[in-house]
Image (cartoon, rainbow, N blue to C red; front, side):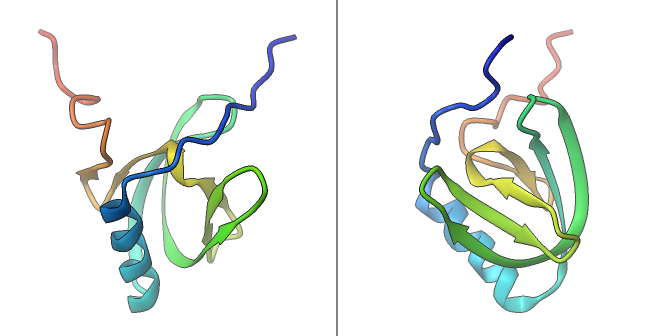
Length: 91
């Protein structure tokens, strides 16, 4: 059986600050991310907080979802660092 946990990779400080600003404003934001089984998904929710655990930093949403920060692909249509070309067409 393949192990689904990966070592947490710290995210760009600017993205973290942007997420904290969204949390402070308590407004709904769209978030696209990978689940822990590498499944692409999206949600629209209010960011309650960013919580650090021993394994990773998590985005805690008002829906109860917890998203690892290093699995975020886009927030409000803006690509996370490292995912700028993720949706580029190689047509």
